[in-house]
Amino acid sequence: MSVTGTAKLWLKALTRISGLIARPVREAQGESGVVLQPYRGYGSPTEVFLIGRVFRQSRPPPETRQDNLLADLRDIGQRIARHAVPNADGTVWFYGAEEPFTTDQDGYFRIHLSPALSPPEDRLWHTMDLALEQPQAVQAQAQIFIPPANCRYVVISDIDDTIMYTGVANKLRMLWRLFVEDAESRVAFPGVGALYRALHAGASGDQQNPMLYVSRAPWGIYEVLEEFFARHGIPVGPILFLREWGVSWTSPLPRARFA
Image (cartoon, rainbow, N blue to C red; front, side, top):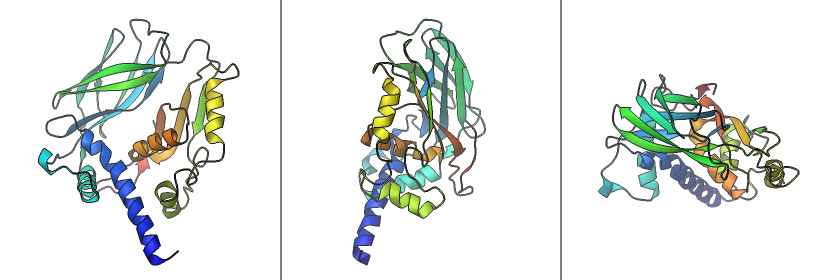
């Protein structure tokens, strides 16, 4: 491949990466850039579990927002400079149950509660309401998966080099496969979508067995994995990451974090 062709591919990759990484910046709910970010949760009719995070980031004036590479790079800079909000207090509500939460030193919180009312059996995903009370009022909603009574098992799967070929031992090659190669051929193992849909459906075809995914990747690629699952028709489910991205000007490397 020519130097020009390679440069164009990397520019395309940079644009795609920047758009995905910058996306959470534009979802800040608080007036001063406070973000209440819940991830997908899971559970049963009697108890549910959820992980989320609270952090603060600067927000540009609305008139300066644009959908282009330069705007994405500006937003990524804001994201790198964002700060976890430790000891933030909030409350969640879920089918008559109310539970307070407080974030840890990295801004993460965990919810483990028992619904006071029985969740409806005619749906798989249920909405949990969240409200941050301090340092400022922010509201959000999370999606909780509760499997039906006729499910038969829980599918717990690794993501790295199991569902998607990342080549985690070679970080440059991993980034190339994730963001440069064609979406249909770059990272998915052959047949993985069909296999996981079959596991989700079960032998009867309507079991809706819960899917739970784990990864050594950082929380920062959550949006990338959402796109990957959608492109390859893989049933969505809660994702548990084992590391915190830890990107900041003083801490640029991932660190161990057990969910």
